[in-house]
Amino acid sequence: MKKIVTEVIPLNFWKYSTPKTVFPIASKVIPMAFLFAVILCVAGIYVGFFVAPTDFQQGEVYRIIFIHVPSAWMSMFIYIIIVFWSLMGLIFNTRLSFMMAQSLAPTGAVMTVIALWTGALWGKPTWGTWWVWDARLTSELILLFLYIGYIVLGASIDDIRRSDRTSAILALIGAVNIPIIYFSVEWWSTLHQGASISLTAAPKMAASMFLGLCLMSLSFWMYTIGAAFYRLRIVILKREKSSTWLREFEGAP
Amino acid sequence: MEWASLTEFFRMGGYSIYVWGSYCVSFFLFFIELYFMFWRFRELSKTEGSDKNLNGDVIEA
Amino acid sequence: MSLTLIVFAVVKRDMQQAVKRPSDLLTVFCFFILSSGLFAIGIGPDPELQKNIGVGVIWASALLASILALGELFSGDERDGVLEQMLLVPEPLTVIMLAKIIGHWVVTGLPIVLVSPFLGIFFGFSTNALLVLASSLLLGTPILSLLGAVGAALTLGVRGATALAALLILPLYIPVLVFGSLATNAALIGTEVSSHLSLLVALLIFALVLAPLFVSASLKVALD
Image (cartoon, rainbow over all chains, first blue to last red; front, side, top):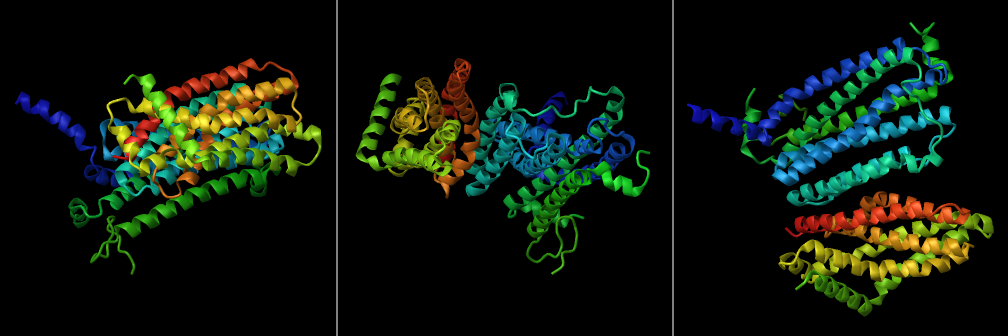
């Protein structure tokens, strides 16, 4: 009996790393994730627009923060997860890891575009300019190009094995660059125009503002999970269209 | 409640273009992403001899 | 064969090939000068403006020229099967790739470094600034070659390889561009230069260690 138990546990672990087992799990996770995303988003917008008070310095325009900061966070966070999955794929040679990484990239690019767009709309009334070539903005723009490069490189190599590995290597190289562009804030400070909102500046405001930020961030997180798993299903479908398990799954209710 | 009236809410203290521009474009981008994903999934899950996709939805011809 | 001998052999071979076909080399060199010149002509004859914008122009031209030079870095060797032989030999691939990158820099990067002071004169730089410009390019162009080699290895044999490599690598060039032009600009306005140059040295060491690894990994995947 004991022997069986010790053998079953590792088998279960690897069971979840094949497209066949993940596909139905993803199908269950997707509606839940999107549902939570909508609920959290509604709650976040309610807190952000109806509970959080007007900023005494910036007026109402600061309410962009509830979409700007979560999208900027997610844009970086998604890249880190892509690096993680790429590393997993290169080390353990698992197809699914590369699929996960690829499923995340377009959402990461969308988050980056949103962060840049809302940043520009926030910068115009507060800094008086849409765009500054300062470290933060430039690093975010580089991140967008990293996402685009990652997607384009993966798409332009027909051989799946090579496409997976090559784009994973690119993701790792981009990760090398991230700390460099991140720490350049200090070296580039001469070009930096005025600081944006600081959460510690007005403690009373911070509570409701912070709540709104947390709710919106969780909502974006849930959206990312839903979108990534949805795209994972697309990737699996595309690659394993001929395999029999998909047919069987289709036949099931 | 922060806002005296609905007009006040939409005015956003004179920053309506910036605030609503941010929110509308962001949600529009999410919408576009989702739309393309759903469309791609429907296309891919169409199989020969079957009028149902993997969700069990009937696909119109 | 000792590793130093390998490096010398590969560098020598690449230089011989470059001498045999000087047009590739000349194209990159002329592109660098022409592109800087075009900016100067486009800006107009105001000497103060030219001086202010010269650093950025020369550095950006160096970046673009180094991208232009990537086309033949691995594709020639891939066509005649030398690259596969390099993967098969017992000597470490990273060292061979480092040697290839060094050879590539000698024929494309070094001419840019050597001609840059003359371009600086056209833009009205002081003697000190000319020296800093050349030394920052001396430290910066090897980084460009190292990063560029990674881009060339990733896109080896892919359709539209050069344009794709440019998309992948130009964003990664930005830190080099920043510190290189900061150093030269500091020399122009007479402030301290060494901190920017030491950051370039740090980037160079970083790239020297990591780039050959990434190049070897990508080539192994590409020729798998």
